[in-house]
Length: 125
Image (cartoon, rainbow, N blue to C red):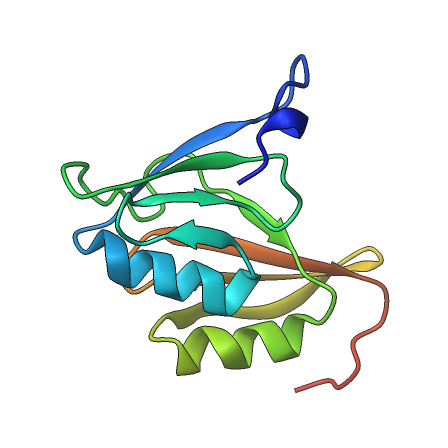
């Protein structure tokens, strides 16, 4: 995993994600968001190479009680379908915010993850 681009002053560069089963979380984030993951080491790099981190079995899942990350996706409807097939669930269906579409999901561990897309949706479910 290339870590060179994580060195950006003021940029979010490292996350610890609560994951009772780190290998399962690695598979989920790889499937849904295209992250590079190492199941054995429990680490990941996001699809942009700007954020790295670890899936942590010892952290309690906070749901929406803590900081909630939002991940940009090119097609919110396709992503939400993948969320469901990969074992997560949609907690808030897409809603419009200006020229954006935003939705809330939960990964299989129960972590709250927002997703957002800019521009018109390919389909309006």
